[in-house]
Length: 241
Image (cartoon, rainbow, N blue to C red):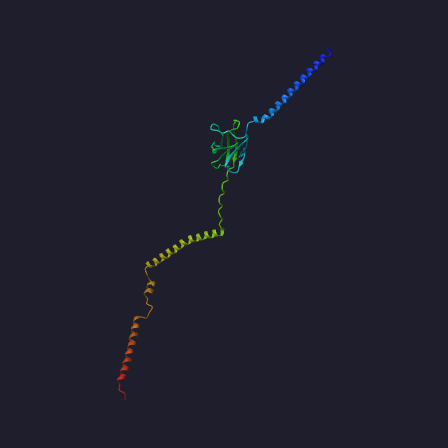
């Protein structure tokens, strides 16, 4: 009996140790499983999407800035601040009033953003009470200037004709005035100049018959008429046989 006692005690001790190791392993596995399952619940919510997104280059100004977060929704209240701020390179703000619905937060822009770089800064309080402040940038492309209207080309022939006509009109007007002035001056000079020499004789010469010839002719005609009249009277007074 005494020879079997040590072996029995050794077997019992080994079984106890093995049982303890098994219990410890199970406890460790259970703890690891609980930790793994609880890890997602311990992680904080975060921004999962935005419009526009960080680094976007927009061809035109957006109408609003929208942020969407993970989790069941944002925490709201009088003493809780959830806000979106939009600023340009000069620090001027462009955001409107911040609106919240569930896990989504947005702000409408009251005016169109000109071309340039902009920063979206936000502060939110998640459903677990954790607050976060962050920001991202985007860019709006500068608007292209309106093209200047192209003037319609004029026909070269018409342009040259109009130019020639205007030149001729301008040149003709002084020439006519000069001609009239020269003619008036010539007439005035001729009227004022006295008549002398042959010109005066030509002016006083009568192209008709001399006066004495006209008088003689008239007397001759009158004498003939008187003789005819006397002969007629005598013939009437002579009696017929």
